[in-house]
Length: 408
Figure 1 (cartoon, rainbow, N blue to C red):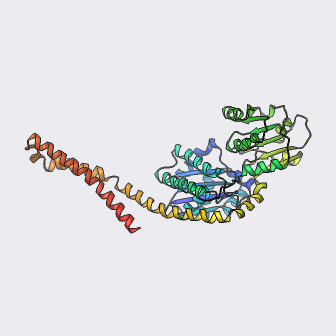
Figure 2 (cartoon, one colour):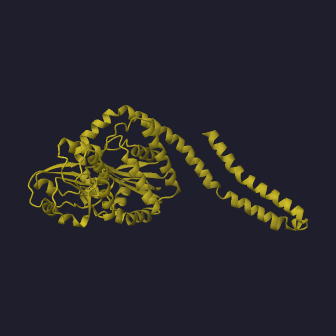
Figure 3 (cartoon, one colour):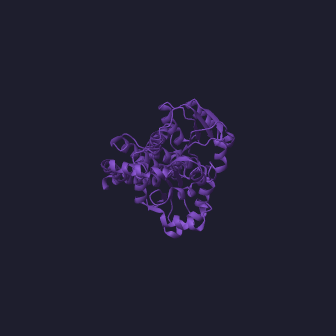
């Protein structure tokens, strides 16, 4: 794991609103990662962006000092003002080699989450990796890393009670909503049809809420969620023209600028003056600050859920210890797996070399002798050579693995 590195910006050290400035929209992700690869000599990389973390997992020979982090953010080209650049460099978390692998495992097992025990993070990490794999940003090394990440997380969730009676950002948000005692006939306006909104909408449907209007950039995704909820789907571009009123807005999109501006929100109110509810689980927030300050609103956001999350960590302390033991065991196992894989790669040229030796022997070194043999003798010799070839190909690999296992 000599070259495994992680640059992490998380809720532990950075305000969530500031963290939102590092969220990369899907449309620009490929170009930004290509720039990182070409300008910083990074071989494999994938990007994780969730409601409380932005992380870059990659391989590089560079040491992650302040100079490299500054270059990394500069090449990423997020348009950060200097004061933000300095803030992020000062509050970044960096992990290298074994420490990086341990951090990735802990993150995927939700031990580093705002809400310990929530399983969504594993799905988010897998999707993040898969998107970058398909785009060609990862190769064999990251494939092995992710296989072990998934194996470890599944063991933690299966063999500990860390996710028993699971608590997640979504479930915490629903609890806050429930505390407001909103009517089951409330008009629910959902902005974004991603996993977070789907989950919270299912909570609401389960508790007999039924008046849903769903807006999304891709109409097909809105229609899919609307079908599940017996609601009505709209393209996001039609949000400001919506005149049917609302009691609750639930929003979580990947937008990098506010969707609920003061102008849009005023149009959505359509003259209504009663106090509304906004659940904004997006990072950065989809709701402009002036909307929160200018209108009567119950505002629920990720930042406000932190205190409940802290209590959740205290309640699960014993399970954390058990989970960390599982992680340690998987790290030890993976070191052997990684060495075996290195041997496989190193030995990958052996079959071709043996074939070349056989070809030279038959067609050059012993060509005259073989040509003097009768047909039956040549067939027997060919069978012997083929047999020897197959056996010789497997011997170096088997012996190398046996030595590796014995020494470990």
